[in-house]
Every structure is written in C-alpha cells, then in structure tokens.
Image 1 (cartoon, rainbow, N blue to C red):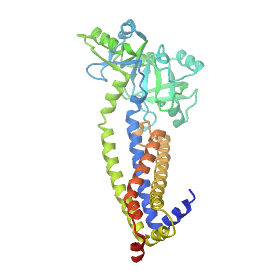
Image 2: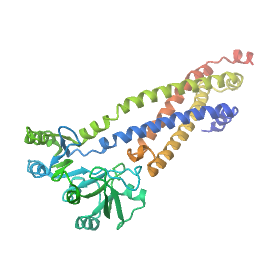
Image 3: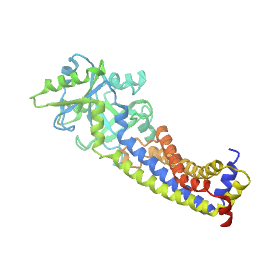
Image 4: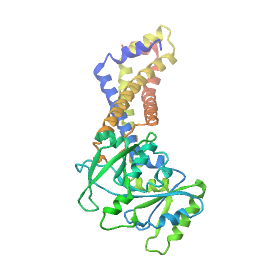
Length: 383
C-alpha cells in the first residue's frame, strides 16, 4: 500500500490514455451488469418459486380456462394443503403504457398459498368485505401515488370495453425480489360483471404439505382430469416459471457470448496499454532494479497499475449500472412495464468486480513479466 501513490502517479502521467482505458473497463462492466439485470428479470420467478407449490393450467394453453369445480376436487387430493386460483384481467389504467398485472383472485386461500406476500389483517378484512375492493403491490401503489381508500378506474380490454371501478383496500409487501406490481380483486366481482366465461378461472395454484409429494400429486391432478373437456397440465411452480422464462429465448447463452467477447476485447485493449506503458518506462524500471528493488517488486508494481485501472473502471461501470437500474425500476420505462424486475444484485456486483480483477491481472501479466526480466545494463543502453 505504501507504493500506491507511486502507481497512481505513473498511471496519470498519460491522463488521456489512462482515462480511455478506465472508460473501456467502465463501459464493459456497465454492459456486464446490465446483462446480469436482464437475465435476472427473466429468471426472477424461477429463483423465488416455492418448492411446495404446484401450478395447474389447461393442457392446451395457459390462456384456456379451467372450471371452477376443479378447486374442490384438487383440494380433496391427499397432500394438498390449500388451493387458490387466479384469472388474468388485462385492463388499462388511464393510458396503454401503464402496464401492471391484474388478477381476479380467490380471497379465501390467497394469503395461505402465497404467504410471502404480506397484507395486514385489517386491510385484508376490508378487502374481503368490499365486493369492489382491491389489493395493490407496494411498487405499483408507489408508482401511481395510490393510497388506501382511493377509487381506481381500470378499463377492461378482454371483458368488453367498460371502465371498472375498484376501491383500494390494502397494499401488499414481500421479500426483496418478490413481484410487488400485481393488482388483485375478487373473482366474484369479475363473475358478476362479465358477459361470458362465468364459472371458469385462469389457473390454480396448490400449496402442498410436503414438497416431496409434488410429483405424485401432479400426476393425480392430471389423471383426475384426463379425457375431460378441460384436461390439465400440472407442474411445480419452478418448472412453470422456467418454461415461461424460456419463451424469451436463451438469455443465459446470449449473455455468456456477449460477455465473453466484451471481456476478451477488454483484455486485449488493457494488455496493449500496459505493454506501451512498460516500453515507455524501461529506463525507470531499470533504475529501480539498479538501486536495489527486486524482480518481484517490479512484477507486482506493473501488475498493481493494471489492477488499479481494472478496479477503478469496474467500480465506475457497476456503480453506473446500479444507478440506471434504480431509475428504470422507478420509472417503468422499459417494455412498458412488462419486465418488472430491474435489480442489480450484490452477487452480480461481486461477480463483476472479480471479473475486473481477473482481466486486470491477465492484461498486466505479460507486460509485468517482461518488466521483471529486464536486464539493467541492456535496459539502460536503450535510454
């Protein structure tokens, strides 16, 4: 650490070159962080999926409904603790760009199945007692400035073109990374107002007594509905979330390819910069050796310069990415709000910094070895 000022002084003798090299690292790590955010956005549901929950959908497609009568039949299967259902509403709040998921839910068992999403008891009681009551996620309520008691109009797009009025009776919260953008209202209200589709729901979610029973119970549900007009496909919540995420394509593979190309290019740029820097200072390095500094010191000295560039660029790039993701999350500016989770995790930041250090070491290694092997007499002759 006592030679840190010397490393810093050497780097900033060529301010433009050092600034551009640090900037290259910053841009590369910004891209790395943003790709990690996009990957997390598509895989968030997979990471947080409950191990003790099954999702039951129509075998034909998720958009095909299931009969309301299936709820009691699924509940009767041994090992099933609670069953709830949801139906997609797909309405518009004020403008088309104001997207957030809206579901008609079963208030009887919603909280028991999705226990990680917390609603205060008094708010839930008010919601259940009000046929037009609604519960909003904390993120959506914050985004639109809603408070409990507000009257919220949502224009239906699937069930006609009328405006539906809801009374906000509660706001739910959850863990970091949970979907806090949803809007819930009672399925009874949906059934009262819709002209067609009465007596059906979108899909069921079953909470199990033991996750180990998931395969047996999934087979039992699908066998129960086999050869009926509404056959089902039942899978764990994680499997369902994984298949849903894969509809967007191989995001992980794309990130790996782009990230590898960027980091390899960065390795070449930084390596070239350090090689030029060493060539310019051959005489200085030879003097250091002549006055008693060891080959190991010269090696570490050059590597230290490369690492300082890498770490500084990495911190700037990842810090900028974190700031941008916070702004995007607050504004919902990307995908019209369809992609809700723009969060740069601590794990991704740590991975980015480690990648910076590795690239910094690799980029400086050959120039550092070259400097270490300098012969004092030959080096001074070249000055």
